[in-house]
Image (cartoon, rainbow, N blue to C red):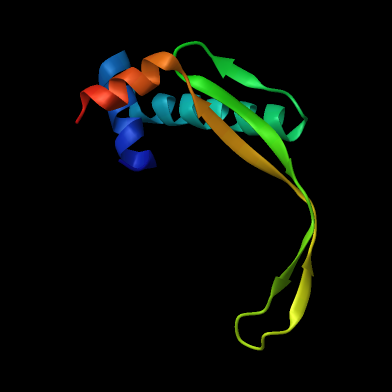
Length: 93
């Protein structure tokens, strides 16, 4: 499922226009990204938690030349699924 499919599903489930569904989805995604970028955790009970994790800097290798390169430290977005999400994913098997 891609973003267009998700918008169509939201539109039909909520009985709203596709344009409204797109605005809502975009707003939710932007709000989550802004919160995580600001160092907050976003918890949707039953669905999961979005948060940022620090990844330390390290030395890597350029695959073409074999030259050592320094990879900078970074904040990495992460998602931890909630219990209901895990249960739903396991029912799909």
